[in-house]
Image (cartoon, rainbow, N blue to C red; front, side, top):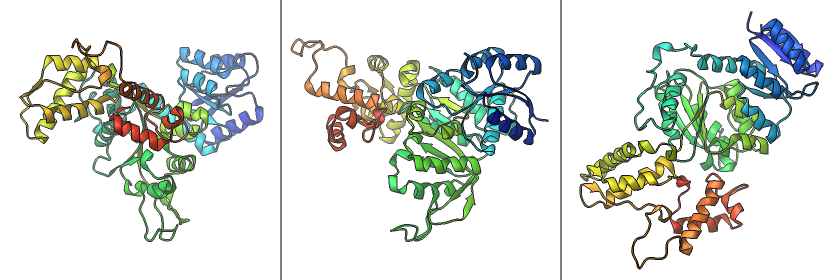
Length: 457
């Protein structure tokens, strides 16, 4: 007999369907409660292992109210609800459930969600022992990942836990924080390390070719399809696929991706034949997916499928203790690449680096050091060209008064603020061009003239 489950659902027909579904799958349903009060009594009497929780219940208390009580009792729970407005999703997220299933749903979806939830709980409790013989050290050394400050050490420990498993991983973090490097590390520490690691930048895929790129196509599937094309998922078969900027996928492609996660199969464009694929999915984004779900631009069921094991990478402004080590790492790297003998960085420059907020994170620091190595004339980096807004106060008596910016500086800062508010997105709904009320082509031109790169946002 599998785990004991309590169903907290006010609609009897839905609750009874859930009971039959779970019983057929081997679970022991210990009761059905239509209100928080009845749920409390059944929890006390039956001591269930899991709670399936609707949000709208009979009485004055909701499923979210009960969830906070369950947290105190250390009882794991999953939501099953048709309510997906933003306020509800924010309240749900605050309770940190093990899953959220949107009504209506298929039997297999519920059972898979339960299996994923149980695995997550085992991992969190330190009980997961799958592939223990390949588990790396508690804090693995990852080439190219420097430092431990700002919560990075905890991220490294979580990588050690999840890498040997088969579960999907969602990497969250601002642009330039090293999400692809972390995805590589998860692959390298897994049993799939000898198999392909395929990177897909979802933001760079042409809208009309997304399905062809991901799933492939047969000859003649559309105009210009002169040959069969093997898609990224087939290329990654047996290995790992890294879907960067997953939040940029349109709804149609999200549905197809959800099918891959559920059924482990794809279908090429122009073909009715399904192809089984054995692929581990790692996704990454710098966007707020909960907000995207509430807005209806990202599927909630896909979000929870991907968000089995989230990794949140800290921004560089929260890791300033690591800046000297990172700066020296990039100095050595580009000294070799540029055939120069740069051996250090002056204390004054390190102080400048520490005082800057790094909106472009590690990528911005790397590019800055690369430029500084190229322009250095001695054996040390003695000068760096940070954005004007981060420069030290001007002491030249002939310089402009403190606090007064040029029009170019004001324009640059304004565009950077808009890009940051739009999470680096330039065009389309919610993009910086729309926010600034200018054509995207105009904004791109201004960014180029002002030296603004999307990767720095």
